[in-house]
Image 1 (cartoon, rainbow, N blue to C red):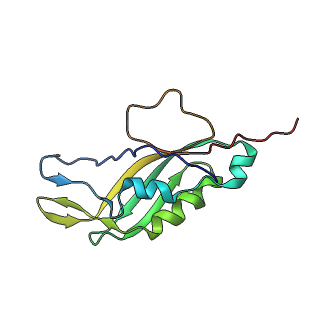
Image 2: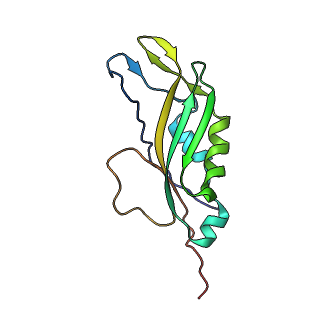
Length: 134
């Protein structure tokens, strides 16, 4: 059985006071979202790792408008397909729902992370080592 480990997400909201702002978040929760994203088998076998910046645009109803993935294309489908299916709790400012963007990093890694970043990060990890032929 493949085991995947995912750490937290970096969430960035630009240009607004935090006092009356409630950031958008997945209805299922970050931990459940992490469990849905899988390490692509072809990337695992090839020993490919990546860190990508993901930008999810969410409308005022909590539906995903767009997903931008700034990493290796081999991981793009794994992340985008899940994020497009997820319902979000929209951002609110002073109690009013509004469209927003959620930006976070996704890291696909084959071994334990040594220098874990101080910000929240989505880590998708495979416990199976990469197999390389010499």
